[in-house]
Amino acid sequence: MSTKKKRSPEQDRAAIAEQRRVIEGERKALAEQRKALEREWQALAERKPNVPIQRKRSDWLKIAERVAGLIGIYATLFGVYASFVGLETRISMSADAPINSSDIMSAPFIVSNDGQLNVHDVTYGCIDRRILSDNGSTIIANRPYKKVWMGGFTTPSMVADIISPTDKQAFTCPMPLIPPGHVTYGDVIIALSYRPDWWPFRKQIHKRFATALDADRKPVRWYEQPMPKE
Image (cartoon, rainbow, N blue to C red; front, side):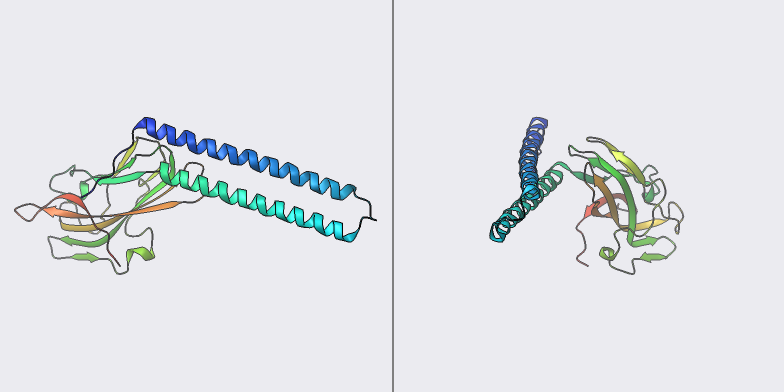
């Protein structure tokens, strides 16, 4: 399995500095465009009524071209920053060993901020695809997970106001329908929603985990699995 080479902190800082330089250059260009547009409007306001109509149409065409240029600059700025957010926001999830060895649901899931930006308003949810218990009861998801970003079970503690770069947060999946220690197999999807620094839109991540069994057919650990195609 191929692994992605991790960038050094110096490379991260250099990438951020370059992105900021590009954004600052675009902002300066936008300011110049705005000043030129204001001068055009001022010239039109001061022009006498006896100016030929053909000249006025030409002026309006110039203004339209400048407005189109401003729109292009805004679109470029948005695209540059969207790329910056995508490159500098890296969230990972993993599963740790159970706190109580006889209860697989006590295993904490770890969310790590491996990027260079803070993430805000973080919310988690556990979507149960298939849960088996030792008394024969079964919990099976009755709809594809993609139709709901947040489903299954969640609690008020499964939130975080902010996770800073290099920080981690742990949480466990609640299982109110089966008593602790009675789950014999689990297949869940962890749904994570968050908002990166300086970004108005939320992003979502889904990771699937299933239990591994020991020689006695008892669940001992969660391992990440490929996401379903449903």
